[in-house]
Length: 319
Image (spheres, rainbow, N blue to C red):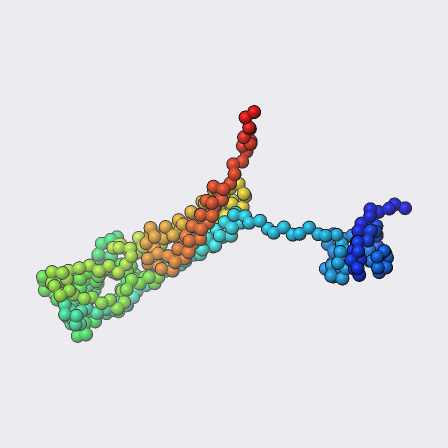
């Protein structure tokens, strides 16, 4: 009969170590110190929890669990994923706004004209022109302010850039105010409820008021600006995604820098196109993506400068 290797168990009554042989089935031996029964059970890789409580020391001590080590690349991946999601969300948002910009629609525009003394000006002449390819095109649409200084163009205002030329009368010379505004189903640059105030000085009352972040242009250019912002968001999201995938390998910390730069590029693109000023929500989301991207950029840069050089033999001491 083959013998098994000896092992030591602890008596559950008095705690005295007892030498025994591993059993193939559950059994009992007697403690030499107190005479109490000591259980022997077959060895198990993971003992049941109740055995540790009922019979302390019955199984050999297990090595303590090693706490997980902090990895920079895991943090970079976790940070870049929100940048990717926000980038693609911005693509969808800009697509929605761009679709609304080019939709044919008409609007009713109203406003008030104030005289040089600040009181409502009756009888002021308001001419509505449309801007096409950066130039005002007369539409033969005009009106005269009422006694309370208000005017209204009802349901005949087209989508796009509009020019309201307001004068105090039809006779020349007369002080004028040129109001450049933009209306669309996605964005209305203050074209409803416009308040035009003539200056007290006639020489200083000739002025141009621009109610649009894009300047004097037509709807095609505005749509291009918004579409360009969406394309930039898509490129930034793809760069961040590529960085998040590549940085999972420990030897590619530089890709974390590239991914973080993608988040910064999204915000820079919305600033460059001016779309963020027309749609503050887009600017806010892109700013959050830029902040997270900057954090990922910084973390990846720290990891890059801390990575030891690989593949070089240790320096030999001079004999």
